[in-house]
Length: 126
Image (tube, rainbow, N blue to C red):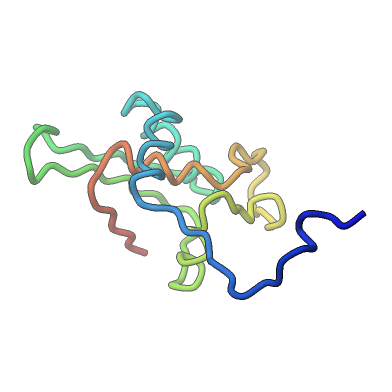
C-alpha cells in the first residue's frame, strides 16, 4: 500500500520561524508577575556561579525611561555565547562544568524569557 506522503515529490523546504509576539505571549504565560521574572533572572545569575547579585530599579517603573539592572559577578558570555544563549529552549547548563558547588536551578533554556515580561529592550554588559 502506498503511503500518502510517498505520492508527491519534495520541491522546496520552508524554514519554520517564530515571531517575537509568540515569544512575548509565551513569556507572559510563564512569568505572570514581574517579581517572578526578576527571581528567574537572579536564579540565572546564580546558575552562572555568581556570588553577588544586585538589583537596581528606577524609582518610577512606569516612566518611559525606567530601567531594571541585574548586576552579578558570575560567568560572562562573549558574542558567540550570547547568540547561542538566545536560542530559545536550548541550554548548556546540563553539560557545562560549574566551579560552584550549588546545584543548578535552571535546565530548560527558557528563563531568559523572563526579560520579555519586564522590558521592551535588553542590554548585556560584561
